[in-house]
Image (tube, rainbow, N blue to C red; front, top):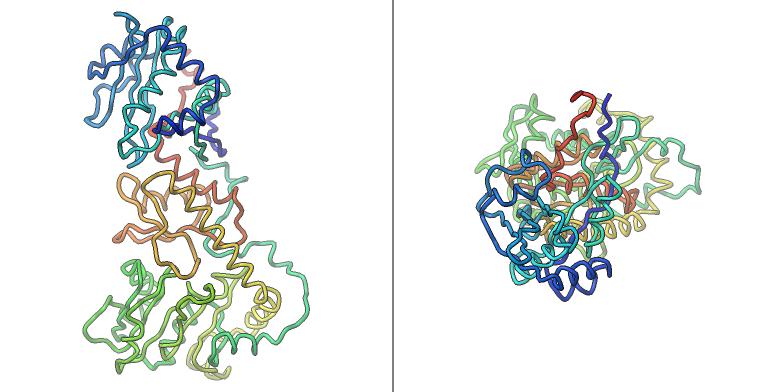
Length: 468
């Protein structure tokens, strides 16, 4: 059985493509190598001749057969002697990748590779590129070499950990340990919620049944068309509704005519059509699942619709529990018309809220901090950034494009134990950011995505036993 590994977060090395920043941050040993090559009279030329690079690469059979148009090959000489070469490849809008590099005995003696890195810094200093990804390795000696040229480290992960040690990270914060929640002083939770919602409300077992009950409470006939307006990710949201309720109603994005309307403040972004939709004759239901908690001064959602739906388990460490806001329905109505009465669950939700509702500001603060920390990580790629104007930190939402599509990211993260939501049409993906997550878990998610960007992440060293 061959050991593969590469399933633990490690640190890659970015070299700033700004000479002032890079020289200030470089280790003294790297600077010594650059000066040594300069003193030896090294000179660097750009080339497209791979046959010259093949003389330096450790295994010509594995060298790229042809240079891509955007790849750059630089060759180093001392006098007329070829002593080193480097190929760099753009991998993101702001990052070049040290794809191939080699030196002969003379090149190693004068540390030609150190100067080739420095030459790349000079060549791209005034370009759109901000970093050269010098590399990462799980071999100690090679990793030590890469880190010598690191001016900005970043977390990276190539392969998912084994099933027995794989985490389970979801947008919802509940975990198994929450089954043993301690008893705390009882608060008047119904009064607290009524004041928070500024309306009557009815407990529901979960978000899907709360939304279904809201539609039934609005007396929308089976088979009717329900119009859907979502702030972002509208297509995937409509698909989600049709999957959940396909045997009852037909959900269509922004139809001219419909029996009722849903306005969804998806992923913490305000649906700006909500107020105008509330002025129409057909009943409006607000899906406020992702805006239960928002900072003071943020737009208040949930007050325009005939009913609004909110999800406790999306925000607090509860396994289930939601509310239908706008009216209090007695148990007989929930049983006869909504078909989702579950008194045991309702009692458990109330018990959980006794503990967690008073801590909602702490949850909000931690989520906001996690959003900032995650944004700092994704800023390194130059291609991923938090979608602006989010009023409520339900998740970290960013855009991505080929070859790192949101579906590809979603599928890859699933193998790492991370559950995400995405919308292909708008190239949006939503990552967990709840308050239970620490820096290590945020880095784990980023590292799994950053691993896709490394062109060598699928490489597996051949088993030496098979070559015998």
